[in-house]
Length: 319
Image (tube, helix red, strand yellow):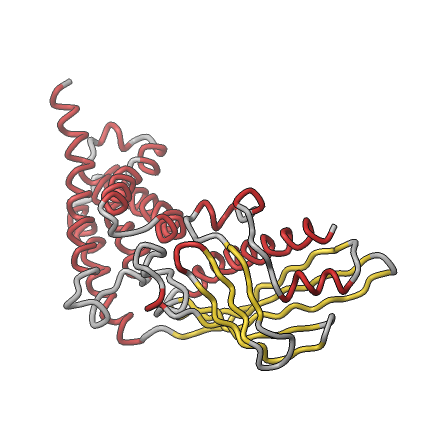
């Protein structure tokens, strides 16, 4: 019994130590941006794949015979790694919330792959696991050499309002203080993003300065680019990372940072009938990663959550 506990402990502890070591390499300041970065396919997929393979390689063969074991056990080093990085403030909830599903899927695939060779009693099992562990270190420099490609996406939302257009428009251009209980942004709240507080506008018209203020020091500086009174307003959006306290957002998801930026936003008011207007709100944002195909899902959900939250506040106030 004692030997079984020790064996199971080592099955989790050794992959965890390996994962912490690889993370330290990918997050090191002297290599960051040159050969290895955390925000890469190499780290987010290949690293957990290798850790999953190592976990099952170290496990007793009688346990590995269960498919559920090969799928679930590789998650444990990841979950302990999550706890360590969050408790030491090396990573934040937002970054982990987006990365964890990909981590878990990759680790399970690694576990299933290693389990396949273990059950076949392959002579090359150790070689295959070693390759799986070294692969991200070999691919990462190539991925960095190829570089990331910036892509622009749109987040579109709307809401129907039973109110006069003048009243609606007043709440569109300027948003008074939003109480905590009015905040309906469940996704952004869960991920730890700052909640919206208020929006100010110095005058109605092209060239006006609008300031959208969020908690924890996050401010969007907005300049009105197009304006049709009570019909349409388009504005550029700029967040300055140097203005945002380091405790506000994780460096990997900070708005205006190296990987994620918001470009512009547009409100458009459409009359549906004598008593109903449809308020459209859409924005454009830019992603610069080597895995935009995955990051764009999360960015889209986050942007829509922010926009729907604002639209719900407006609806509550005008109705």
